[in-house]
Length: 303
Image (tube, rainbow, N blue to C red):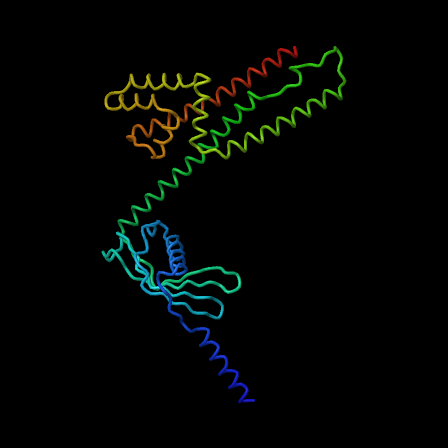
């Protein structure tokens, strides 16, 4: 019995030692490079300030592989480079293990120590991250506003009314009217769905260009330029010149200033936001006026 236990233990140790045998790999091997890049991407995700985005692989110094009990392991010694290491060095060496699960292939990694970066770099990247999040939030809200305007315009110009083209004859069967109305509603719903999908696939820049065309078609750009000219009368230089430049810009250019994609002064960023808000509000105001006008006509016809 004791002999059997010793034999089993000895065999287990032999198997583990065989499985744990390390194999040296060529650092330029494609698989080694791929695993190193995976580890870098995962490491970059671990920084709240995103300062690890400044890290890049300078050199793979050493690479080995081994078969673990649950994972296929690759051990790497990597030199990472960044101008923001707290040590002041341009490159630092790290030991990394990439583990690939034998059953599901899920990868994970471990590192001997995390890179330490300068406080100034952390603050700079944090501010950059906040600004990007603000821009993304602004783009999201603008997109919702613009999509609503374009879809409302489509519904207004593509509305189908069965009473616009009455069938010949003074009397119509009620069932035929209902069937025709249902058909028109289904057709319009299908076309509206297609239009909604088309709008959702367009970039924000493309949507703003469409709104720009709509603004010119409805003579709303003149109202925007008039408001800007009135503002210029109350300003002194350099703000008068900056306001004039805004009055000549497209909606896309105004939006690019608000999110920092286009250069502009603090005054222009503030005013570009105002001009965009006022322009989109005019579309909503015109929509309400059109709705009230249609309701008034309907009441008049009923009387």
